[in-house]
Image 1 (cartoon, rainbow, N blue to C red):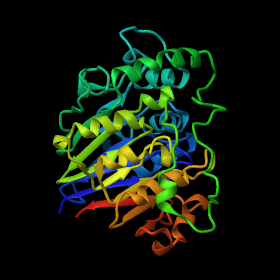
Image 2: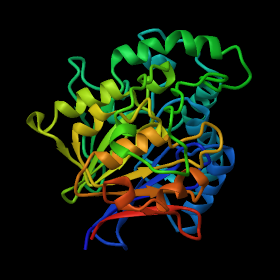
Image 3: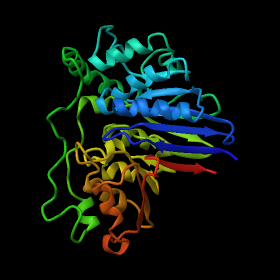
Length: 354
């Protein structure tokens, strides 16, 4: 029986995802999406080797934020000669424009590591992005029949990263957005982890959309296998992600079996417009909430309010910002929802097939 599942490793405030698919448990293929921080990259490598995974069809490095790219460097070093990587999907500086120059520090470190590997072979070495006219880009199927469609970035989002990349090049490391917060203040009258909660009011709270250049370059994908669909949102900007979704399925709400929530449940990325563009019950949020306080209560409230017949929230950590939702009853919230958390191994796996 076919298998299609997404595992979210414990990656602190970042992402480290293992997408597995195939005709059976004995015939699986795999895609890795990001590798979190340094310690996560090493743990992810050990996990793959421990599972006997000797090949991944694609290593997707969504963008150069440290909580996505840092662990990838350690992951690649750890799996050399142990795991075959068929293709690396990563938009380096050369993909931001037609200029071939050096880029940001960790981006350049990654460039050096993948120079001898297949790099963006799926698009003949070009940028992983939507079509020039803005239409989602359907990629050639991966081995084993996994279909991928690119929903973000576009050329404009990539170009906006050029001055940021150049500036970061002069630094020893790269932490886009250091000392800055895109998050709006907590709504007056709402107390996190306590008191009554009006989901509708909280979900309707106005917040500013994410405009951080690095997040705008995120490779966001729609993965399809065996009639099931997963949206891999990375840290993509909500305007482009929503626009891309509206160009699928004839403009109807896009049916999803799972959404990996963009930007770890930031209210600047999880907008009501984005949720209105999809028909989805299951939502995966990857973060421990330690650095930026994600997931935002406003974002989770928007998810909960997006369906009258209920949603299921998947978290890869049991932390105060996530367990607070487990303790709230569906009656209190006014909307039915349930929560699933990481297992004893420290990761959460969402099975879509069988």
